[in-house]
Image (cartoon, rainbow, N blue to C red):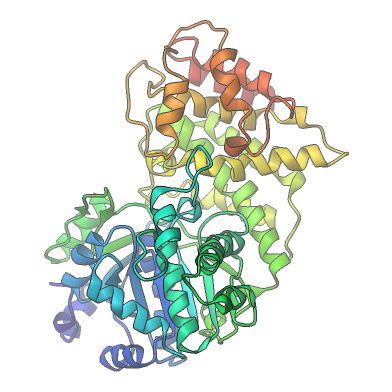
Amino acid sequence: MYLNDTALKDTGQWEEAGIELPHFDRDAMIEATKTGPEWVHFGAGNIFRAFLAALQQDLLDKGLTKTGLIAASGYDGEAIERVYRPYDNLSLLVTLKVSGTIEKKVIASIAEALRMDRDDQYGRMKEIFRSPSLKMVSFTITEKTYNLLGAGGEYLPDTADDFAAGPSNPKSYIGRIAAFTYERYLAGKFPLALVSMDNCSHNGDKLAASVEAYARTWVENGLAEKGFLDYIHDRGKVSFPWTMIDKITPRPDESVRAMLEKLGFQDMDTQLTAKNTNAAPFVNAEEAQYLVIEDAFPNGRPPLEKAGVLFTERDTVDKVEKMKVCTCLNPLHTSLAVFGCLLGYTKISDEMKNPDLVKLVEIIGYQEGLPVVVDPGILSPRKFIDEVIRVRIPNPFMPDTPQRIATDSSQKIPIRFGETIKAYLANGNLNVNDLKLIPLTLAAWLRYLLGIDDTGKAFTVSPDPRYETLSKALNGIKLCDKGPFTAKLKPILEDKSIFSVNLYEAGLGERVEAYFGELLSGPGAVAATLKKYVSMER
C-alpha cells in the first residue's frame, strides 16, 4: 500500500486495513481552495496534521465547508519536500488510546503545501494573502519565533536587516508574515484574523506585537504606506485572537511505523531533516484534545464549533490558557521532563510508574498550582488535571519522551512556573514559602543543564536557545561538588527573563540554591532528594 491519491481510489485495501478514508470529493476541495482560499496555517508539523487538519476534515466530511487548508513552512521547508509532496499532501493519523486500541485515519484536508524559502512559492503565498476570501491565518511556530530580540536586547540580525530593507523580500519569519499582510493591505485592506495557536500566555498579543513592530518600523522609514500601521491596529480589520490548544503529538514512533508496515504500507520511514525535524507521512497522537479560541474573526471563519472547538470571550481564553499552561498540564510535563532526563527515562508514561514522580506532579498540580487557578467555567481545572495525571500522561501507548518535552525549557519556565510564583506573591492569603516542589523543579532544571545524569553519565541536553549561555555560566560545576554555588547561580536565579521574577526578591532563591546542592551531592542524589521532599509533603 502507498499513501497517495491514486491508492485512495482502491477503497477495499483501506477498509481491510481498518483505516478510515475521507468522505468528500478531494479534487473538488483542492480546486475550491485554490480559487477561494479561506484558511492558511504556518507551522506544518505534527500538531497541525493531527489536530487542525483533522478538524477541517471533519467539517468537509459533514459537508459544512468546501475548502481545505493550505499548509506553509517558514522554518524547515525540507519537511514539505519529504513528507508532504511525495504523499500528495496526505497523512496518516494514528490515534493511540489509553485503552490500547488504535484508530487510523487518512487526513486529506490539506489542499496545498508551500515553503516560504522558495521564490515561486513565496509568490503564491502573496497571491493567497491578496485573496478577499481568506479568513484565517493560524500559527504553530513556537513561542521563540515571536521574539525579535537577542540575549543582549538588540534586534536579531535578520530582523534588523528586514527593518532596514522593507517588505519587498524579508528574511525573518515574522517579517515575511508582516510582508504578506502588507500585500493584503495593498490589495484592498481586506479583513483577516491572524491566530497564534502556540503554547504561550496571551499568544495573540505576542504575535500582534511582533507584526506591529515591522509595520511601525517600515512606516517610520518610509518603506510602507502610513495606512498600513493603522490597518494593523484596527481590530475590525486585523484581529489577533487569543487561543489555548492542547493535544500531545510526539515525534513519529518506530513501533507505529512498524505497525503500519505490517499492514502493508511502503515508504513509511521517519525523516530527519537538516534542521533536525523528525517527520514522517504518519502522525501518532493521543485522543484527548482541546482548542479554545477568542471569537474575533473580522472576515468570518470556518464553523469549527461543529468539530468541537470552543469559541468564547478573550477573558475566558485567558483563564483556560493559564489553567493549562501554568498549572494543569505544562508545568507537570516540564517537571517530568527534567527529572526524567536526570533519572534515565526515555518515555513519559514509564515515569508514571515511579511513585515519587507521580507524587511530584500531584503536589505541583493540586497543592501548589490549583490554589491560584481561576475556574474558566467552560472547563473544570480539577477534572482537567485529573485527566492529565490519571489518563493522559500514564498512557503506555503514547511514545512521548522527556527529552522532547525538555526542548526550549528556558522559554517555557517563565510561564509554566513563574506565573504561579507571581500569583502567590500577589495573593495576600497565600505564602510563597509554601511552594516546595516548584523550586525543586527549578533546581533540577539547573542540575539538568550540566548534562550529567543521576548515575554520573553524560547525556545530551535538549536544544534550547539559551543553553550555550547558561552552560557557560555553570561551567566548572561537577557532580559531588560541595559549593557554595551562589556566585554561579545568583546571576541566573535573579534573571526575570528566565523565571518571570527575581527568585531572591521572591524569597525562593536561597531555597533553589540549597536544593541544587542536594541534587548535585553525588550519584543517586537526584532520586534521593526527590524522595525526601515528596515524602515531606505527603
